[in-house]
Structures are given as structure tokens and as C-alpha cells.
Image (cartoon, rainbow, N blue to C red; front, top):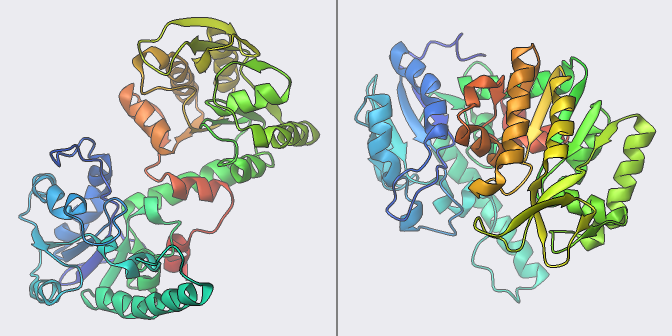
Length: 418
């Protein structure tokens, strides 16, 4: 069942969204991208004459915590939807059940943070550090048992289930996967955002127009091993950027100064280079770097060869020669995946490399390439540069996108397709 095929008139829909938005110290939303992304789904349900129970998480609370309360986003949600959204102070309490049951067509109820309950994630909390294996197993069993009741209660609020939270699709949590079992295939579906995310990932992995180039940033090779290994079976060009650069550079015998490096992954870097060569993949590495004498926007800087960084200096971005090399590869591509900036883009003095990559992707996209940008920092990059509308698709899912690229089946997607 697709959301366009379903008529929500007179129906209550439990909609799992990803409203895990950043808040400042005064609980003001600093980026509402994820909230705006869910609006088409929510507005379709209301336009049909349905009512909505919204479930989401915010942050990683280990119990009830004021700073993670979804009431902080309520006012802005009212403004975005143009509806006076009701709020339940507890997603499980009697108040939530009563308010859900009383919802009339066109009305919306926002439940309190689902992760205030350990049952949402299905992981025990509050275990002593010296807990025995038996105690850990008993706690895990207990929370799994209570998770069934938690999930059943959430499902009881609604007539149908809509998952529009791609950012949590890689988690087999109560509200993202388990709840779908309580609805038949005609009453569970993806929201518009999920539909678009699933199609975009499928296109970049299975409907490949070549050359296919992936740009992988990030500080650690260890966190991207499985992604890189899966991509080596698919891409023509793999650009390695960000902090990972210096692990590869040191592995080849280069001098990297104080640059970030995983010394225990040098052999892995060499192994990945060999695999790329064996598979005929063009592995593209930086040749120069913008280096600084401290990790600061105001540090003294210079450009130098990436394998000749002076003692006491660290690489914080790529240099102009590398920008040109990366850009030329990208501009010649027909499918592009970008995950991770080239440097410490949070510092304005070290955004130039990421901007060069973004500009090249925009140019390639204008010339007919399909470009998918995903992962929190890459998304922040294109937003910072005002280029989000200039690429084919910007994914809202960080971990979910990465696991999909690794070739893993995402529980939140599988639960709807079953």
C-alpha cells in the first residue's frame, strides 16, 4: 500500500516521524529540516480528513529528561502545520490513550518522547557496571517482554501506521519496525519522505549510470570499512576525504604531523587500496592539504604536500591541487554519492575543499548526473552553502543511509514490505 493509494478519511494514523532536531541552550530549534521534511505526509492525511498521532524521539535520553521533551518543538509544529497540535505528556499514559481516542478528523496529537521508555529501543537501562552476565540477560529479557506491551499500546491508538522516519529505519525499535506487525499490508505504508529516501538509495545502488563516483569523508576509516568495501563492488571512482586521508597517507609512509590518524588501521588502509586496485576502482586520495598549527579557525595555516606535513601541524582540509583533482573526477561522473566533508567545515577557514566538492557535484548534476548527498555533516555542508536544491537528493538519514549503502536490510523498511 502506498500513501497516495490510501484514503485517510475518518481514520486515525500513527505516524512515526524523525523530529530529532537540534536545540540550543534555550530550547530553540536551530535547524527544522527534519520537521519540514515530514509536512507533505502529515498534510496529506489531514487533507483526506484523517487524524494523526505523531510519535518521535529526541536525543538519547536514559529516562525522562526535561531537555529531551518534545514539548519544546510543539509551538513550531503548530506553525508549520497550521493546526493547534495537542500534546500528551506521556506516550504510554492514560492521557495519551484518551486524547488519541477522542481525536476528530483534522486533529493532531503529539506524543511525548518515545525514548523516555527503555521499551522503545528494547535495551535495559540502569544496570550496575559490575552486573553479571546472568543479570544482564535477565534485564534484557524483561525489557523485551515489556516491549511487546509497549508496542501493542502504541498500535492501539490508530487504525493505520505510516513510517516517515528514514533516519531511524536502521533500528528495529518498537515504533519503527515492531509496531508494523499490528497492521495488515493494506494499513501500513511509507510516508512521502520514506518513499523518496528508499527510491533515492535504490537508484544510487541499483540503477547506476556510469561513471559512478562516491566521495567518502569522515575522521575514521574504522567507521566506514563496510561501506567502503561494499562500494568497491559498485563504484568506478572512490574519493577518500576528511580525516581518513591521513591514515591512508601514513600507511604509505607519509609524514602527517599532528593530523588525525588511526595507527591501528594502517594495514587496513593498505588492504583497501589493494582491493580497489584488484577490482579496477580508481581510488582517489588527496595530494596536498591545508594545514594548521592548532585545531582552531584562527590558527596559522599553510598549504603543503599531504605526505610532508611539518611536525606540530595538522591537516584540516584539502589543498587546491586536490580540489582540482576531486572536481575533475566528480564532473565526469553520472552517479554521485557524497558522504562526509573534506575537512573541518565547521570552521569557516576550512570549508573551501568541501565547497569545491559541492560545486563540482552541482555542476555534474546540471549536466545530467544523479547526485545523492547524505550523512549529517554532508547535509549540513550543502545547507551551509545554500546548495541543497542544486543536487538531486539530500538524504535526511545518517546511519540509515550508511547501513543501506553497506547493503544491509533496514528493519524499518522490511517491516512495511512484509
